[in-house]
Length: 218
Image 1 (tube, one colour):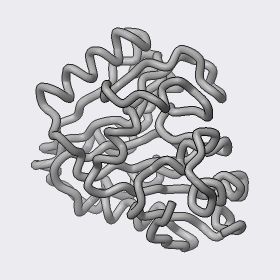
Image 2 (cartoon, helix red, strand yellow; image 1 turned 90 degrees about the horizontal axis):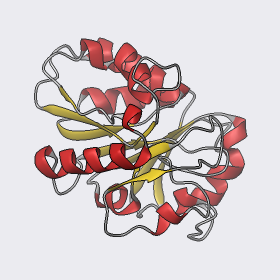
Image 3 (cartoon, one colour; image 1 turned 180 degrees about the vertical axis):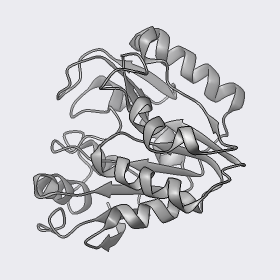
């Protein structure tokens, strides 16, 4: 896939600035690099009115659990994002009921297309909780699905947005750092579309914010 490549020593800062300037419906992801971006974005903007935060995926745990994407994002940004509306995935409902509930919430309060979606990429080239070769990659009707068996740790069931939702987004942003992601980013950005590398199935025109280590094979 072709993407607008931004290589810098501090891609989290650029992501923070994009988030702080955002309006409309914004989907955020889990991970250590996004956490840094969220913490910085919290310091760049006080009034988040006009922003609806959604999630790309969630582990099927409660919001206070150490593996909760919401819990991390809430501590880093959402609890201080005054004026924002937050749409949490209720992981504690389990993969099927949680996915159905979030799909209903998207239908009731969400747009036809997200204004901005922030994506991480795993070492196996997965995005959201869409893992290599998983049936969820082929979903074209539902906007949210449950994933019973994730492709990598933590090995708990997930809830995830589907590829049509990702690819319909007005602005798609990858945020990826670390040498352990270099091979994955090569497959995502320089390889052909391949269900074994889910990130490669993202629509062209995305922005990739990555550090030199993650860009080493590009």
